[in-house]
Image (tube, rainbow, N blue to C red):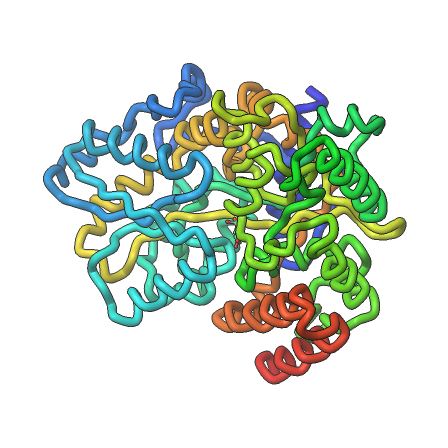
Length: 462
Ligand code: GLC
């Protein structure tokens, strides 16, 4: 019971934070949400969901969808971890039961590159893609190109945490249904922690540095020259903005912008960026300045890193049968300084339909299936994708598959300033990650990088 509650608190904290700024996990649980009788989902539908990657849930809306049989949809699906195979299995199941063909195009792994690609599609009013994965930070930028699903998915929207639905609503228009949530966390090797004499993962950045250094030296001395202490996302793209937000927030350096004012340039933020720049070529490989999620995961999953910052998808990927670190790692809150709060950046993806799609009705049926409670449970069990539906996050089997939903409840869920900056968010984030990347590369100091970012952001948001 206690664990269920903790899980709820964690996810609720995440969602609350998605409404703007940062929020600690709230003190009280939400009243029980109905499972969604309006869309024909009852609690019993959440039993008997397979945890097999080849066995997605039955298409409960197949009958309605079959009227569009013969249509071909194209879906910009996932490309990281188990996501890509899961999307193919889901699409195949849907096609088999409805006669609607779904072509899955893997998205660019780099969220910033994906953004640029979608922007080009929309500028050209391209009819080529029907359904898109939509990052939690994008609704403000893309709303005018997205099919308004406010009334079509009025019942479905009620199933999800209200904060995410609000995030996806722009000027009263529901742009997308939530698909899964994300938050940043620290992955660590349990076997090595023990071997080197530590009984708990680090809670401060100083401790992380100490352990990373010690294990790196030890493993290299044992004959693995490639072993590194800590991997993360340092390339000049959206993922760096996420890492930076965690470093800053956990070291009392704020959240870049606050109440419309640019706050990125402050002594704590400078110190946090200096600290990270000091990791490059030390406890982190020099190449980390061009790492994205999958680069970090490849190193960690290959058994060549003590710590990794990443999203929940890396948990299921690291525990597959062929993973060298299966059962040898766990997750913890990202560290803090003595006085900061542990922070995890809120991420997550929605499913949206292009307003230029010629197959909107079939696309609606596909999105209905893909974001459903049953599908979210399957995705949680197989791929450790964080549910956006309370009844799914509270499900005992889900909590067992994703223990971190319970264990990381004190972590503050910090949001990027996408609601504040709206369609300017991508530009704001680009200023932030480019400046930070220069400091990581050593081509400028942390102080100069943040002074430059401050000036550029002031010009952008004024
Ligand atoms: C994850 C998050 C997304 C974020 C991206 C950055 O996919 O879910 O919100 O923008 O990482 O790389």
